[in-house]
Amino acid sequence: MRRVYLDNNATTPVLPEVLESMRPYFGERFGNASSIHHHGQETRAAVEQARESVAALLRCRPSEIVFTSGGTEADNLAIAGLISAGNHVITSAIEHHAVLQACKHFGESGCEVTFLPVDGRGLVDPDDVRRALRPNTKLISIMMANNETGVVQPVEEIGKIAREAEVYFHTDAVQAVGKVTIDVERISCDALSISGHKMHASQGVGALYVRKGTELRPLFYGGRHERSRRAGTENVPGIVGLGKAAELAMEGFSRGDDQTISALRDQLQQGILAQVGDAAVNGEGAPRVTNTTNLYFDHIDGEAMVIALDLKGLAVSTGAACSSGAIEPSHVLIAMGLRPDRARASIRFSLGKQNTEEDVDIALTLVPQTLARLRELSPVRKTALRT
Image 1 (cartoon, rainbow, N blue to C red):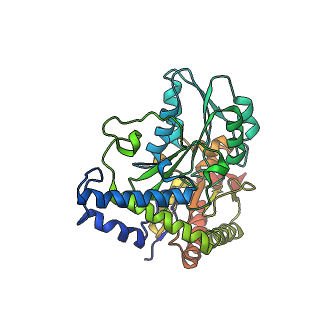
Image 2 (cartoon, rainbow, N blue to C red):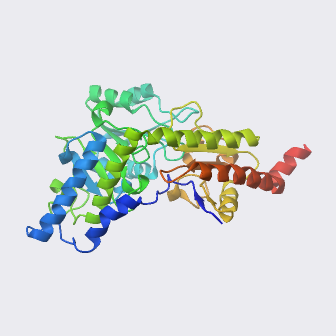
């Protein structure tokens, strides 16, 4: 059985070029990047080269890149490092849990937090951001691209509002990096989070862009690593891999890889909707990253469909991997106004650089077949047909 992986928003396979770049730093190039002898300076040079590559991808200075253990740490470092008790924070109802839970924590620890709504397409209204500003507002944190729907937020407009109000602006770009071009100056953000394993690097590494001159309190206390912004010995193999993935992402934009993936996504989405009824796109009409579509299929249970497809060799998801097994339906889809039953009947398809047209063809065979079988067995469907 050929297995097809269409859950790249959960994690991506490490590209062969990335793995090869990492391999020496598990063995012969093992030095601690803080050591002053040859072994340490060899790995320090590799870390700084990776920092330059990540900075080039985000169009910022290398000194503005802080390496972290991933997107969750980067989000938490941005939020915890920029606010204090008594400050007001503005975020949205559809953020990743790394942002939502951090904001809720600080909301219980002396900060004020405003959770902005989204419209039926999943978009934050910049005017809502402007209206939510208060004299004590210190930080706005709005994601660039949603992990479940792929909807891209109007971060440039929000960044201008933050700049005019002299408020910090952080954006979680974990699901945007490598899929859309990013320019931190155009966005006018003060902090931006990325994660390696969402862009074909390894799990366990990420980065936070921090604008020069921004005072950031560390989460960890220890050595003076990362210019005293993130204590702890650097994950050299992971950082080297992240740098290589950043280089490959830039090469991909030059080749038009994003347009190729977008065409495959559209082929998949349109092909499914042409074959099945009682289905539609969540976030339709909004700008989306090129690799993601989220569809609802009435009269089924989403988790049952994920399991049934997996048994046939197709990997998809009902939403965020970190929420797998949750009893409640997706907070993102509920915030967009979907009924709970429709939110539970939604499936996310997300492509990666490794996916091919043959993968899409297989999915276009398996999804309608599986959906038809599940609907035959669905008591909800049977009741609807009798009435």
